Amino acid sequence: MQQLLKAAVILMGVLIIAGVVALAILIPQRMGGAGWFQQGAQSISVPAPSGSRIASVGLSDKRLALHLQGGGPDRVVIVDMATGAVRAQIVLAPQIPEIAR
Image (cartoon, rainbow, N blue to C red; front, side):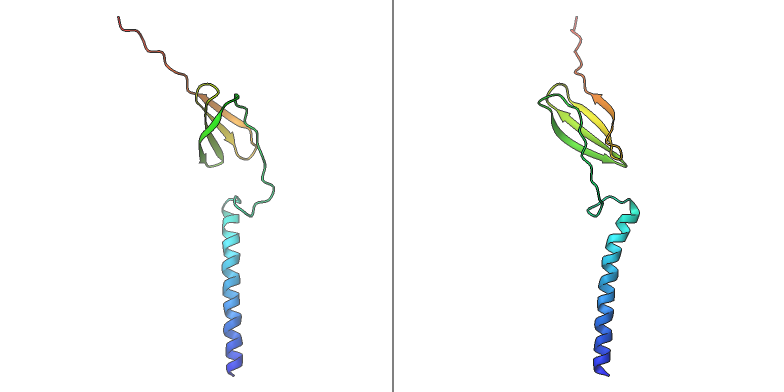
């Protein structure tokens, strides 16, 4: 009787661990699909002048915002994560101050 009880406890422990692992994989998949388990990650190329560097990155829904510095005026490039296409480019143009008269 003790051996049967011991086997039942071990089996239930294994089932609990398997259930937790399954939940850890299935919940993120069903919530959006992005993550370490996603297959076929793609590379994109964002055109930028020579000498540009990424100063910061922002993520919102399915868009990626890249703040680029160097190689000209600062700019923000908005990239569609699904297609890799550049959706918008915002160039920060320096304002010339008016000369006081």
